[in-house]
Amino acid sequence: MKKFVIKTTLLFCFILFANYNAIAQLSPPPPPGQHGSSGNQTTGGDAPVGTGIGILLALGAAYGGKKVYNAFRNKQALEE
Image 1 (cartoon, rainbow, N blue to C red):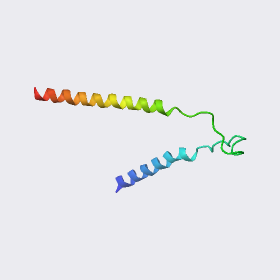
Image 2 (image 1 turned 180 degrees about the vertical axis):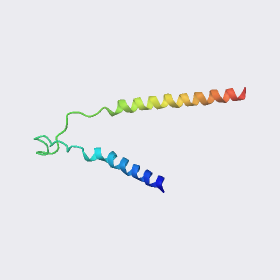
Image 3 (image 1 turned 90 degrees about the horizontal axis):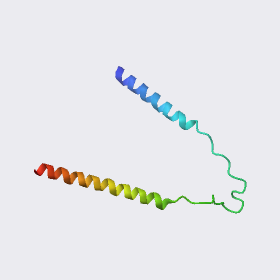
Image 4 (image 1 turned 120 degrees about the vertical axis):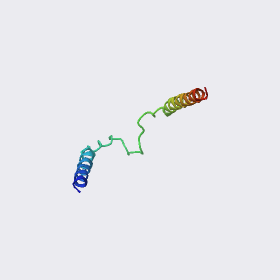
C-alpha cells in the first residue's frame, strides 16, 4: 500500500508540473492593422513543401535499402 501511495503521489506531481508550462504560455499577439479589413491578407509567401517531401522520401529509401541489405547479408551468413 505504501508503494502505491508513493507512486500515485509522484505521478500526480509529474502531471502537475508537466502541465505547468502549458498554463504559463503567453497569449498570441494581436493581428496586424490591415488584417480582416478586406478579407484575410496573405503573409507574402508559402513554405516550400515539395523540397521537404523529397528529402524525406530519399532518406526513407536509403533507410529501407540499408535494412534490406542487412537482412540479405545476415541471411547469407546464416546459410554458410
